Length: 423
Image (tube, rainbow, N blue to C red; front, side, top):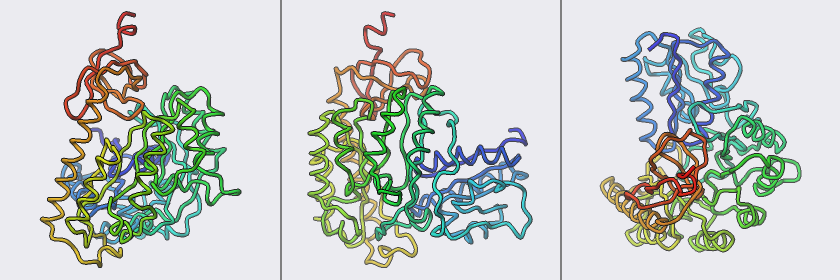
């Protein structure tokens, strides 16, 4: 590996993946060389452990490289990373995209992490493309105003702040002009977009504006949304606008009302089921994913069963399952904890339910012809987020008609549709 190489190691969410490209561009502008930047996640203790492990491994493999740590874990606990002998520089979430952040610093400037709650800017670092990706991500929002009892992310990201609609539309248009076939709107809590802007516009209004003013964009997708917040404009667009992809990933976290209350979530079990039903009424082919936590403090077997049953009742297809991980400083960390073996067992059962749900979803797709975005050779993604494996050569970013012939439990198996294959 060249001594000039700057590697970015990304942990966690899609927003981090987007911001890693911002880091890549900023580091190049600052003249950084022979370095590894770790863009960390703090959502679980395991994510923090993996980051620390990766830092130690990088120091063994690249003894002369500069190791820089940023992201949510660095923002929340900069001292822990500054205390690692392997680390040369710790940057906060606001600092990681600032001009000059990666210019070599003295020992006195080894930790640059300011109060994230004082940050008001969102996306003064818009980028024009993403390395090695078939789709592009646009950060429309950052931070979160809610204080779920298990979550440290507001302390890593700050309060909610929205990118102005005009800036978002302009970036989407630039990406479409570069040939990106799909753009994903991303953020920490994108359904809160606009609440801090004049007139308090909604995510649905932003989405409508993008689709109207960027008619050349083939596909627009939303990242994870809060089940407590989906507006009428968004429902109407799902019903009427085929360019808005029929997939919603819901931040559900649990399927039991008492646990939801103790999590300080803003929706009930019935709210989640109503939301799914209303979206399906508007767009029957919509698929749903969800984040779910197993083994939250005080969770009884009956409470867990309510979450388990929600997977089938809501017709979820794609699960992200998190074993509960107490995060220092959160209210949930002070609640009565379940034995680790119980948490592990429930996470395994919930994942098994997710695998069964995915298999049901895949089986229902057999025989359909879908338009899928090629992500890499032999792999594509349908409009409803179903992953497809197919034979044949195609460039990443191309949209192909693929007929689904079967599945392997994880992905649909497909072939080029007859009309395309004949060309």
